[in-house]
Length: 436
Ligand code: PMP
Image (cartoon, rainbow, N blue to C red; front, side, top):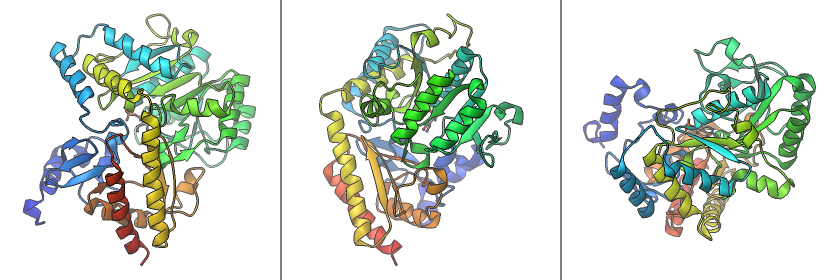
């Protein structure tokens, strides 16, 4: 394609003149993998089409929300009806109550819930609530887990245990992150030591139960169990960030899966986003009544939003949740996702490429490594150049995976067995080139 006929390229040039990096969220810019981002014109089912009219099988799904695929008829109908009734009222609606009921029905650790518009807002508000409810300042997070771009959460580990974090972004004063302690994921001993040293000052531990921001790394069952025990012992809150995993890995979300293996397991606070909005700006946080009633207008912890509980977004989320609650939905989604990673593993093996993969429900991750990493430093052992070759090889063949090796992938209910087969066939061609 010549420069003048590549509409992605000309749009990117226009965008870069007006929007920093040409994008409104950094990972879209293809900085890690190089090349021109695809400007998406439309999407339907499992497919997206770019400005040049090229079709892609979409394994990003708007970074998680599109669990039914794009343009599901029941969701479209609900959104169209809601739009006709009004875009936003800034007043309570029945649909917010219905959505709260529907979410809590499936994730009963939340007795009360508050709706917001993004995962960042939900995570930030949950932290404020944890601090307000406990009267403590320190928070523990884990290296490689992302909880949105709130200042206090943009921190990476300092060297060694009990070194409080350094901001990973310019513009975050040291004073703001001085209370954020960053530990290695899945490291029980570090967590115990941190609580031994700082237990009385810790407001909360926040973690992704399956870390989708370092591709796909599960919290081990002993790690999750110990985190729960230590929080309870020391009066800290366990905050599970299910923005990505919520309603994605199962109807009961990741906490439901851990509860099957850890009797009585429940977080104190849960953070949700993505799937509960079905592709519209909607997120939430929730927990026990006694904690949630600390929020304004009942309690002293302030939190608010002009567009919170937006009527079109809640219609989209509610219609999505009603579809995914139908019997057999997750069994089929999980089987299709499993078929994808098994197919990819088979293709890699046939071409002699080191490969490992894992999935839960409709979320998956794979690594060009011989075995699954347990934490962020292990994830970083992936050869970035090889991943980039794989990414571009797949993209050229009409398969769109995340343009960075730190990101999980998503299968939707709209992906067919033929889509999976076509993806595996494309991957095998690319693996052949990788093995040379
Ligand atoms: N938490 C997790 C686990 C996430 O994956 C993300 C976004 N990918 C967020 C929080 C932030 O959500 P948002 O981008 O909607 O602000």
